[in-house]
Image (tube, rainbow, N blue to C red; front, side, top):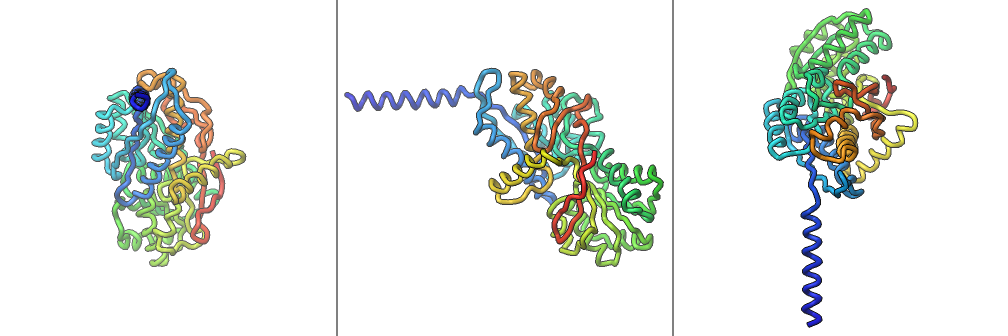
Length: 380
């Protein structure tokens, strides 16, 4: 009889535990990035940043509106393709996600933003820098990095004022990101009194640049700016070296990864590349970023590429708005998200302006020495 009662008690306890789990509200957060294709290493880095934030929040425990919630990450691969980007965006909407972090590329983030806007679901991109992303009038669109106006503009001014560029060639891959950052770079060069000697175009899948570089070499450039991602910039830098083009390569955050020297076949000489990453911390805030990188390496066994800290912050900003609003319903927490002010993240303090852009966004300039990325300065 005693044994029967014990079994009954254990069974009832199990039912109670199962009921408690069942009763726990589930909050679905979507993440989209290219985890296949040439920049899959960057997409996976982003996805890892989201996983890290979700795991930490669940371990700590999140309560929204007085109820304990469990955060679930739904990840999708857009392969850096705009059509696939809108398809997976609709898939997340159909899955009734409460918010979305992504996409990585401007070319996928921009068309996907309409899908999320139509559904009223907040979207925070950790890396889309094309100005158009937040200038479409959508109330659901945010980003936690500076845009190309700041990124390309700062690099253009640096090319003239610091590097004293005389013959400057611009190449871009015709993507929303590559074209956008190249255009802003060229504008700043001209505004600073410089001249663009030649403009060339490639694609985000090109591997042979012999025709372009033959024309470029004739201009005897001292600076070659590339608007695009590291998967193309690496081979481009290698072929520049092989053709005897000893110009400094410049580019935005798309090329500014630890993988660049490897992608260039080990042919990068010290100081041969100067790039800028949207974001950056200094002083006391650097401690938090260093700690994040240590924890990331411990968890995933690899180093941070570029954007995972921004993904991590974006997830935390999104959940913080839900907690503050007392609801995970997008209609309820969206106005609170829009008013985010001085959220203290590992990438710095985050506040949004009326467009959804991060206020006072920082920019970090880097170069490469002995195959390693080395910081030059943080500018605003």
